[in-house]
Image 1 (cartoon, rainbow, N blue to C red):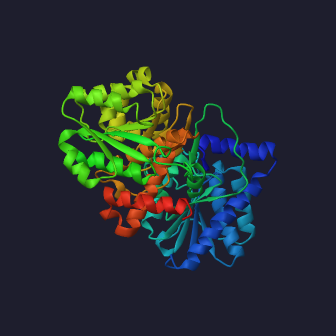
Image 2 (tube, helix red, strand yellow):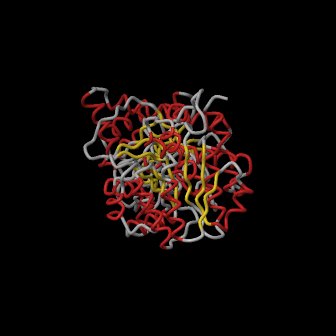
Image 3 (cartoon, rainbow, N blue to C red):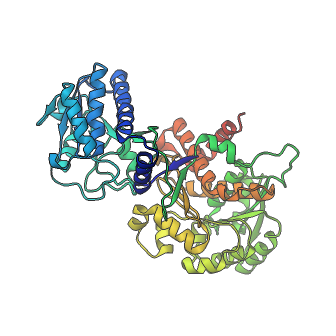
Length: 507
């Protein structure tokens, strides 16, 4: 499991490593610069650069110091690199001044200006993770010249101009081909435009230790190895009952597709038994498409409520919302589900019928996972979609703390936020997954995993949230590899689930 650090947490770790562990800042800078130089040398050797000329564009802080030292290290390896500074030299940090003096003594060329388009590789070392203000003046001009250069660009720690916590471009930002970040990835490298601006992201271990920061979120990301560790294990002497029983309340009249995708995803995720509660008009389609699932239908609101109450005594977990609509019937079903106290997933219309955090807080009795997309989250939290997207982690954590539920805040980088102040940022998936039915598949995966945890009486139910999101994204990546991102469909994502689980189970 990977730790993600905010800018404030990273700065605290940096100070702790230098002041308390007594590792000199110059040592950390040399290690960081070596990591950047390694990637620059690899890019030059790979043929990714149009020529072998290197320009390091440096600011006045320690990030600039990384760039200066990188030029010196490349020169030691026989690669000529020029230096260009931006900003007031009077504002240089102590380590930046030392690195500049060292570069001069080692014969590194320091230019007053440069033709950026003449270089095959540019190292962006203007700003580090501490930037919070809008980029203006000579710095904005330098960023523009880097982006227009056509050179292969490597960003030191983070693309200059990118907010390390939110992924927003602060006026403008460098569009890097790759980014070498120090020790830990940062939220802004994953959220919003972060992935796009960072390019290929590498975390270089340079010896910085994490230091707990009061009132700061604990952020994590799952890795492939975590699938093996956290997925509910198969039980050799188990049966369909011990592998979990999931009830899927989905599909109003003529909305059988949403119910199908959710139920099919749950079965493919290893759930032992799935029963769909849906409108009678969907019977024929669902029996034909998914004979492995059981079916309970209704024709009226009263029948729906009665059926749900009966089925809650059968299942280990429930998932509701895909294709249900926002009628009074859905409101009644969601109320019954919340009162049931079972592990529960609320998606789409099951989220839309909730009036807000206070209503949910009064009804949460068991493990409840909400999976809103930005529009649904904005309606629930009474704010705007941009506010949700630009503060995804903070909004998710605030809603989780206020309600006691887990919020799976869906976006290009989905955030799973827990009431205890911890959250997982998802690193799998691709833009091809922005397709109808993809969210229904996630609902089914999450519901299926919850049922597996509960049915097998296994600990770790909370991990179902980030696990489902990560597995969903990996299945989408599998679909994109086979079909191309433009042709990914919900059915293709479904087909990717068993491929990923087979790999995770070592089969």
